[in-house]
Length: 66
Image 1 (tube, helix red, strand yellow):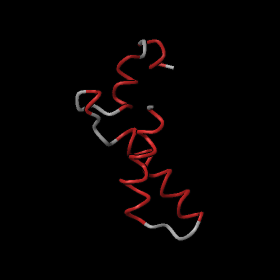
Image 2 (cartoon, rainbow, N blue to C red):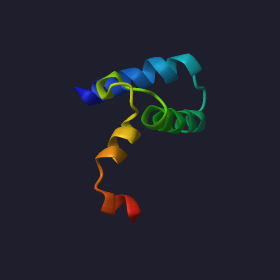
Image 3 (cartoon, rainbow, N blue to C red):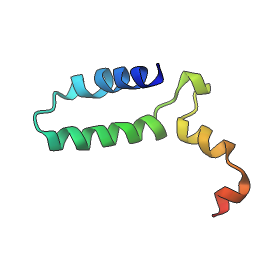
Image 4 (tube, helix red, strand yellow):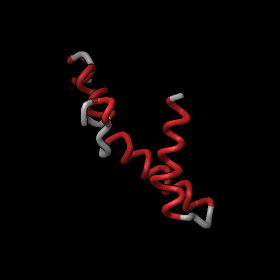
């Protein structure tokens, strides 16, 4: 279910809006969108935090120092 939701977001928030014409543009666009999705887009499931914020907040301090 998660993967289906992610692909719907990618399609509606990136692919359909940009109408890519070349495979290289799709690759670059998807890489940029996935980076934004993980680091810049707030998620309601995380109470407005990004997945990156949630991930790093749950790591033990010893892993953060490495």
